[in-house]
Amino acid sequence: MTWVVWVVAAAVVVAAGAGVVAVPRLRDRDLRRRTAWSAARAAIDSAAVSRDAATTSQPEAEQLLARAETLAAAHGGPRAAESAHDHAVRADELWRAARD
Image (cartoon, rainbow, N blue to C red; front, top):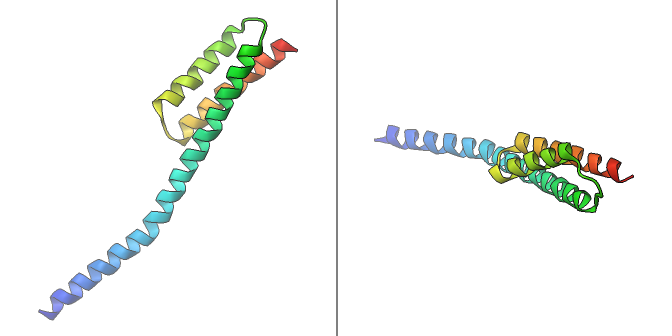
């Protein structure tokens, strides 16, 4: 009967150790994902403002912004957010260059 107590105690210690390792990693991953999407949304908004201020049509910039918005709508991970950010920044640069 005492061996059952030891088995249960060992299982509790292992579960607590796994929790101590997993919880900070999960929080860090979630923070990275939220931060990446926040930056991507800000870049998309900035590109949209540049599009609205542009006086000429930029088909490549329109395509890049559409890709960024599509990626944002899919709610992927940090890599998708970085890709959406890159597309939006490039579109913003194209519109700003056309405006100058």
